[in-house]
Image 1 (cartoon, rainbow, N blue to C red):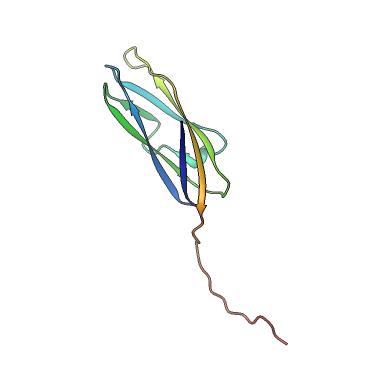
Image 2 (image 1 turned 90 degrees about the vertical axis):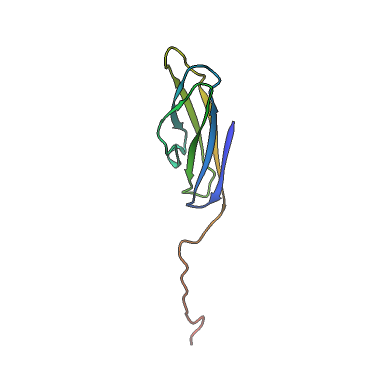
Length: 116
């Protein structure tokens, strides 16, 4: 699964990942970001996600662009055993694209183009 983040340079873009638990016991996952640009991505709610039995939850993943080049990372959700049950390890590919650039400042200058 690939999650794409598209936005302006230096903007923060958030996406939601929905997780479902069909079992009768709670599931707990540790969220880990790995890859070349993992520092540009974050999971603001923390590294641990708990899903109640037969429920679903969403976790937020944020990306802040620092460069014009596309960024890539992987979000790994690794199951922790709770009450003898463990879930499957989940992996999501994270990719970004900068679509436009917002100016940080605009300076107006006047100067002669030519002087004798």
